[in-house]
Image (spheres, rainbow, N blue to C red):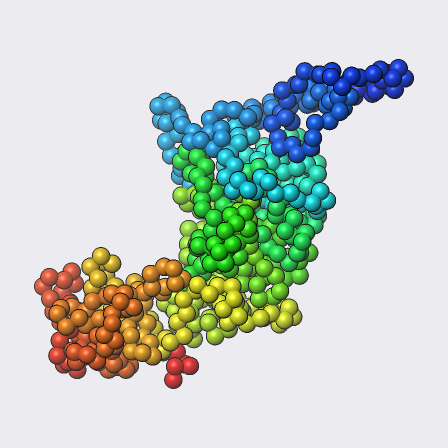
Length: 602
């Protein structure tokens, strides 16, 4: 309290001094020569981005005086971070996004630093909250101009059991690299963290360090990332809302291109380009310009920008993207509400980022990545939420499929290798989301695939899928085996994607995970190459003789190759791990079943 009183006293004295100086100039009309200069104070403000031209000498005198005052106040505020064992300022380890290192003794003290949060917490505490990171924007971005009148933004950070230094570095980075006239507020949403230093110490620091700028919203129970973001949206008051993980750092000039694009069209959802912060050294690694796509399981992934972007030859141009990775996005606050926010019926996280991408495109908006806006993000070794994130992603993916994907919803069930009729997962009530889609008069998913995500592989020729079992070995399933062997095997049934078999109208048998985009390898198919007694798994498109990859297969019947007449059968084998081998031989009447037959296939 004493230090704060000293700061207030200094502010008052300097304010009186400045006012007195202005009165003196006004009364005496002291001339200021154009050639006069004032020594520049090395203040923290000078290290931030400035776009204005140099002010007249009189104003320069006043700014110099205020800069000196700012330095005094800053030194007082810096004591807040020291009390937490943290560091402020623009130097030190990791400056400029370079890898930070520890001494041998520090390495010993840092043992186990990755276990709790999935990154080197000990090292993070040694890196300044104000460190800068590289400007990885394309050079032409720095030549672009944006409107002077732009709407303000609320920045929303979600955290649960995150390192305090990482959260505060996100906040400092946002303040340091977002022009003050555009930054309305920062909202920290605590999704019911357990860590004590994320309670009173965090709140006391941000309220003293950034009075009136930072709000802390606390969930009474753990809601998960999806519903926590909705809570942040409810607390926001600026026209634009930006949602971020609480382990990011911002680059220079990140916000103006985003807000300008949204001002031009309020129905755009904008994603900054993502760079990587390495979890072990906090080095900032540049990622190439990418769009964001996903597999049919609805796992997100980076994909190449569409052809029309490459054809433009402009590295600063926005990139059309079918969906988003999920760690950061910016949207008009009212428009986000109009399209139903994120699905509150989803749990934890996973799938909500895909749903938002599909929804905005189908319902009159768009989504794009901006190369001229860059944010660096820590890719953690582990996630803070429940370890069974695969279950929640699967459940959420089925909600997306049932609401938005029309006949293509079967692809999601196929990808997860679960039956459509009784998947064994309660996805909750989706009636409100179905009504939302109807109310918004949204387009079909077929339109989305044709116009937004044409790179996505389609599997409408599927007639049956799932585990395939033989009547002589009912506890064993057809399995892709080690990929390097290119040979199908028998393996104890477990229901996961290595045992996903897909039988098509053409008579092809695909085995393994469902393919995603045409730019990535497709699932391999079963082939009788005449030479081997074992069934081969190869790239189907490379097999010119279609009969070698064509099979006659009916439920509870044989699997017979149309070219060779040999059947896929099971025999006892000493060399196999389980005493059974999958072979091609003369048909002996063995029968096979596949778990799921699609109704539309007849």
